[in-house]
Image (cartoon, rainbow over all chains, first blue to last red; front, side, top):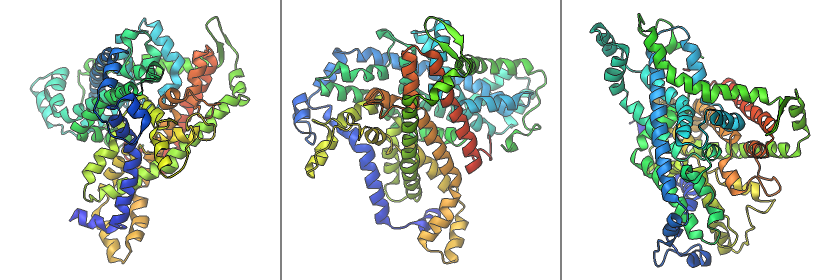
Length: 279
Length: 298
């Protein structure tokens, strides 16, 4: 019923599919071409952009993993993404709970400050971030980047979780208080289980964002054992000047993780971005 | 900034919970202070200094005066504005239009939503590598396709006439976020409004233009704001693809600030940084006014 009525605002089905086809081609063909071409040999890539891999080869992948330490970069990225996600999730949840469920002085100020932080273009803070991280002895360390990512995504985590917690009913917490449960017991035993969908949304979103992060990874790390996959990828064009297949394979590997995560957990990603953006 | 959900009576009483609340707020506040608040303060103060590896001294507004006659800065400013225009005039309308279409749940909408959203989760570094190859003049996909119809394409990224266009082309079709935001908003339009319009004899196009589009004012504003904020911090793709070249035709404010940082002109880099941050704040304030964003809830 609802959708039939919505169809009232339709122009024409043909026009719809034309628009969708054009946008889909423009958005997807470059990506698909890279993925397909990554299974070609270099002569095949250079001779005909429009051909399919024949025979299918994995030379590009082999070179990407042997000539450059892509494997280690992937492992590092996993460490950063997992650590930063846990950090942003924990701090965001701990801050979102009292500011959404309890009344205390200064609450409004904190909410405004943390929410505004979501909109600060952090790339403007190049020099201060570099010096503060260095001053703390955290430059070019894994823990430093994990802490930084926790801070970078704390506001997003806070905003999404707070929006989620505001809508939960109060009865369970009240009952638990009467039963004598303390603050952190309630937080851990009652609120956290209710907030699992919100927590999952934040986790997926922040994990993907950290996986894809390039700017601060290249600002705050320098040695090979700390590079993430994006900083490694950025060097592929110079590292593989004559090995296009390896470039394309590297891009495909780097994309594979977030795309898989998105396709499997679509609902959480979309819900999270919608909640995080419209506030 | 309505406070419907924040009225002081809302929320449970906090007898004896003060310490727990403070403890709970501490880790986040600490991260916020160390990595966001203090850097902001340092940024602002040092933007009035001449600061390099050897010394730092206050030079009052010299840096800001220098901006006025800095040709590269104005290039970066102009390019950032052009990228912003591409975002607002192409990316946002496409996203909103596709969102309206898919919200009607036409056949295959789930597939289109998944496919069109996917570029959102691809990193800037991967996009840079993708388009470095798509735009390659010898074997790239774009010139291969143009060749099929008998056009000889240029060296897109290294030709001063096409470089900016080529860089803009890397992101204008990345519409996933705007699409899903619009879909959510359309789904919230009360069905009665559309039905009563039909009874009144409004045609399909009239209904769409006069009813749906105005109701999407709020979400369109959000999309424009997000697009502008993204452009303001636009760095990864430009930096990896072109380093801002050729002849500074693609340089953005963020790339220029980073360049100044690597050149050791830290005070001046921070002046550009302050402009980026202040522009972000102004955009938010302006868009909140224009589109009444954030009036429903904080």
